[in-house]
Length: 336
Image (cartoon, rainbow, N blue to C red):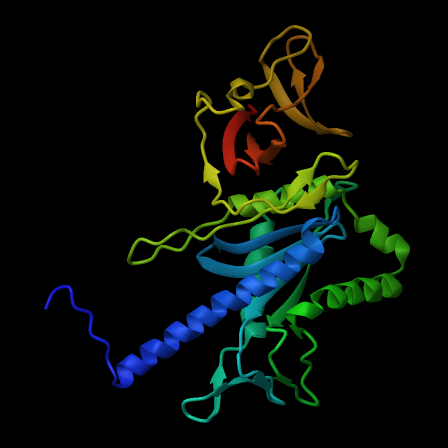
């Protein structure tokens, strides 16, 4: 009969109810972890935070719950798990959770191995991004993995298998700083300082990753996954990273679109002769426009809504105007 919803009581209905409960618990766990991550890192000038990132590269997919990028060129890939009855890890590294219905432990896919697959995709993807350099050499990220469980959950750890990367979500700050302190003590200040980059660079890499976000395609229409990238705080000499509203990155490449920054999208013009022929090159103080008519160099600056900080991003011989606050990417100029 139309308009009537019947609730089942058989095994199929029980499995559906269990699946729904697991999904709700997962969403709750991600939200709790996101709050704690933002609380400790989102306002720091040394970190960029991305939530709910889904990327595709060379036929592989990485669905990352949380991503932390810092000025020491480290990328923390965080997987959130919510186990209301706790989790058990065996000596062989198998993960198990308690099944209240069957009154026994049941196996589940290893979140550590899951994160390893995510890192493999991210490492390959980053090879196509614009990363900082030192003496002409690209500085690659060092990846770290952490599995976050609810602060109230119980973790039964084995004696031999290393489960130190499985932590409670409220321990994330001390765990990461312990990693950094250990790294500095082991490698020394000189090696650490050689890799450090600016807060602007961290934010630029984070925005490049956010621009590669691809929502999952479901059989039925659903709201697309969202990406949060911290925005720069203008009052700080080194761009501080603060959370903004979650928004799906949009791509727009029509220079004539009538948004707040459309005036800048006509392309660069020489400050001396007003010519538009030349190329965008990278120098000591960042990207600038080099005129082929008179040889003058012109800084590149964008204008957007108050409080917004649009930036220039290079992809091959093309340059884009990115605004994290607008969630907008627009083609700006193409070098010959």
